[in-house]
Image (cartoon, rainbow, N blue to C red; front, side, top):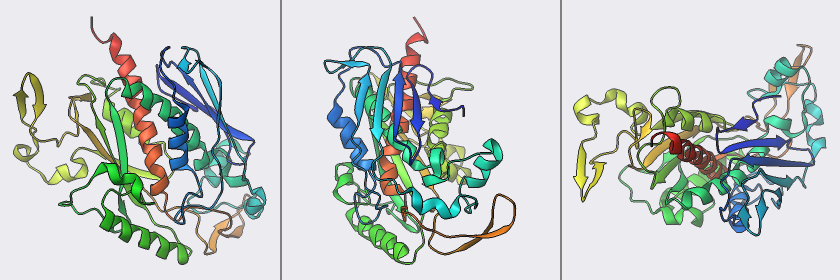
Length: 358
């Protein structure tokens, strides 16, 4: 299986399966001398960890990790950083009933069609368990960005039909104060109630994660195939269950006039910025120094309790039953994943930009 590597200079390769012995990541291209704070890696892994609250999957993983290489005396050495996260709470027997059955809207059929042989336990490589490795790598990317004054912050802005009102004031420092990771307390309560209601029904619900990147300098990205928003879009769409990506004004731009949508430039104390930010911090595929803002849409989890009609590997009619452990809504645990992938993109472009001019 190819396509397990992401990035050009700050490059990661993830490995492992949901019910294998471990998952992990190799980070190549991290500059030497970066302070590696293992507490920050642990913090982000705990934010993604299953079993953290009543509204997520009850699989229990401590998310302990070990750095095998690339770090000496707390600093990166410039050589590949290898990080391993053991799997400790696999229940592979929960998946024996779908060994030869294709679950609706899962990757079972497409993996079988492509490879002819698949690991059905926990979804194998297609499981979102793989994203823990991305979160660990993203934590290292965040350390690099922090050294350059760049911060990546994501939060849940919508669950089902419940969303943060447009006129609401939000405080990003409160994101971790509720299990949904919504910075608007009143909306967070409604979201949590909806998730619990859906869970009791044996069903699932989708949602939206919004992300803001601040402190990003103007000049990151490229004007043709390596547009910054294109790379961010690829990063987000590579996350399990993601169905949509929009940045800046997004799809709302189709109903706006140019006179409404254009971001007027201004110069304040020698710093050029824009009065509005419909561009979402990116123009012509290149960052303009304004906050980079985007939304990521997640579908409802495909595993539901109700029996569903399907077919098996021979094409015969079959029934798919929703056994095993799964999230009723993925967005609370997707927040650190979105941050990680955004950080990896910006870190890569930050390093690539060093060769753009003398």
